[in-house]
Image 1 (cartoon, rainbow over the protein chains, first blue to last red):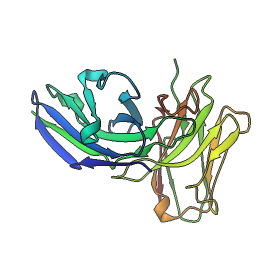
Image 2 (cartoon, chains in turn green, orange):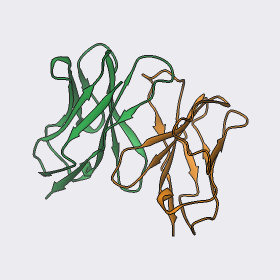
Image 3 (tube, one colour):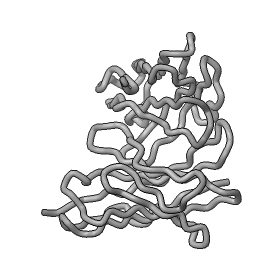
Image 4 (spheres, chains in turn brown, blue):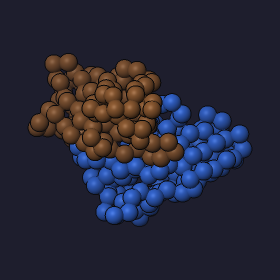
Length: 114
Length: 115
C-alpha cells in the first residue's frame, strides 16, 4: 500500500525567497509521484509528475521536484517565490497500472509575504 | 481545449434535502472521477468511471450518494438525503485513460454547504 506525508501544513516565505515543500512517500513498488496546486476557490491543477526517467522533474510556473528513492522523497522547490504562488499544494502517489488509485497528502498551505 | 465543466458552483441546502451535481469531462476522456474535498483535507475519491462503467466506488456512501455516467460522457452525482458532514467541495475530474501515469484534470468544483 502507498501513503504520503507532507511535512508542514503551513509554510510561509518572503517574496523572492526559496520555496521548499516537503513530501515523503511509502510504496513497496516504484511509485508515480505528483504535485498538484489548488488556488483559492478553484480545482486542482497538475504542477509536475514523475513516472519514469529523469529524477529531476520540471513543472509549470518555475517549480521543480526531485525523486530521491533512497530518501523516499519528492520535495517541491522554486528558487524565488512570487505572490501568485500563494495556494494549497498537494503531493500524491500512485503506482503503474490501470485504475491505480491516487493517494493524496493532506496538503501544505503556502503563504508568500511581501 | 475546454476543461472539465461542473455545475452548480455553489449550493446551500438544508439537511435531509437532496442535491445533484453535473459534470462534463474533457472531450475524449474515457475516465471520470468524483472526489470529495473537505476543508483542510486532500481529495477523497468517491467514484471512478471508465466510459459508462464503474471501476471503483469503494468509498462512496451508497446509502445516500449515487452517481451515473449513462452515455459515457456527462456524469451526475446525487446526494439524498444530505447530512451536515456532506458539506464539502465536490470535484469532478477526467483523464484520457485509466493509466495511473496520465494527468488527471480537475474542474473548479461544486461547493456544497448543508445547514
